[in-house]
Image (cartoon, rainbow, N blue to C red; front, side, top):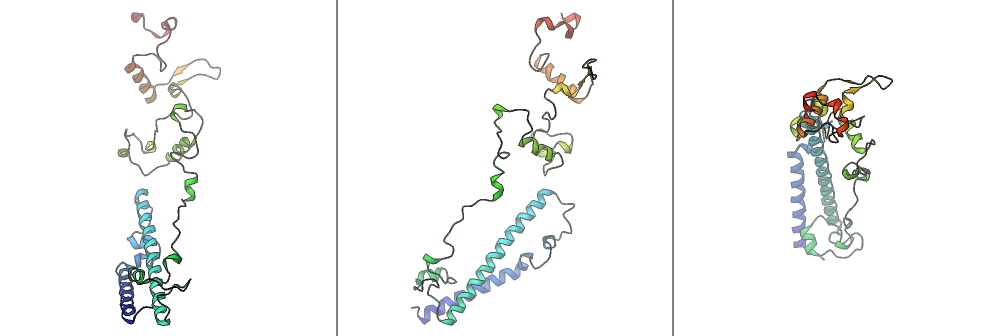
Length: 252
């Protein structure tokens, strides 16, 4: 049984705690939730001209504000519940089992109406967002072992196909900056729709004849890479009997 002095002490703590929460909400304009769209709380009119990363930051802050608001509401509800219990003469007793709540617990948490055994916050959630079931690292439920890569369209290719429409990255975010914003994503130079690099600049007629080289940037890069390595093909030099068609007379 709580003495009158201890009950008065706890009541004063509850009133001070309530005043503190109310003041926080008023000073923070109720975290902007009394307005409409969250842009109003930030002074923005639209998302149209905002960088996607900035929008993500704003969304994170909004989610945090929402969690804080729920916490404040729960805290105020518990305080009012405890004050009502004081008026009814039931304060200090667990509303589940009816046992006396130790004064030390009430002193640390005056807004509680439960003993520690019956506290509603006993269970710690260990569940994870449902999205993690399909977004396992690095690209989902696919075999991304670099030692066993294949040319099939996989999850990485799916990401690249979507990333071509734009990401939050800029050229400065990449280890090797690209020349075009459409290539600002992971491995934009990767072969898509073909296997060998020369398929970018070599063509033939419908009969497989009249092989023609069409000079372009990929062709220049391909030739520069071969020259740097001192080889004739990406898989090494040609056999001796095949050199002649590709070597100048003075180099024979």
